[in-house]
Image 1: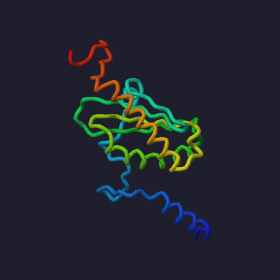
Image 2: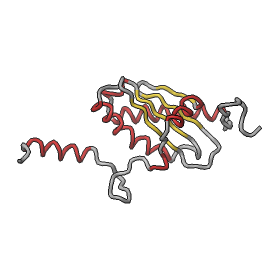
Image 3: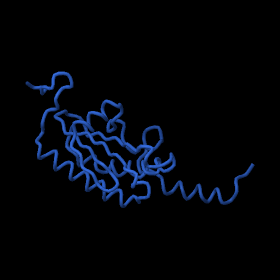
Image 4: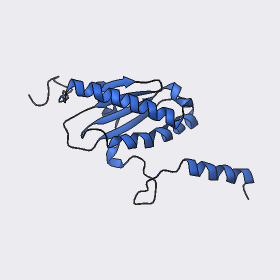
Length: 162
């Protein structure tokens, strides 16, 4: 059974506009390298609770600086408040390469969480890029003003080095 001609045109147009620019060893696209991703709920929670926050019109950026000698890591939060699954995935697809482009500008050991607000649903990639750049620079400025503090442990409330 053949697809309707319009379906092939739509599929070709969609494939060109969503194509990532890096490819992994298995031939699949890699947008955020595996070692640059926040994975667990605990990692996300630590960044949101302990990091510096900066809000823009469409995004909230949380940045946590640490003394760890690891590459910067990032995670995205796009909740159901943004829209249905199609809208959430569209926002995620637009944010992922933007975040990847900023990873190399972050200090070593930093962790970043970008939370999309409902107003991001109708935003273009350019608008999201502007908001991400503004939020990230503001959060970084706030974090640097605090100094490179060692995060406190959960149980004692004391810093790890003393």
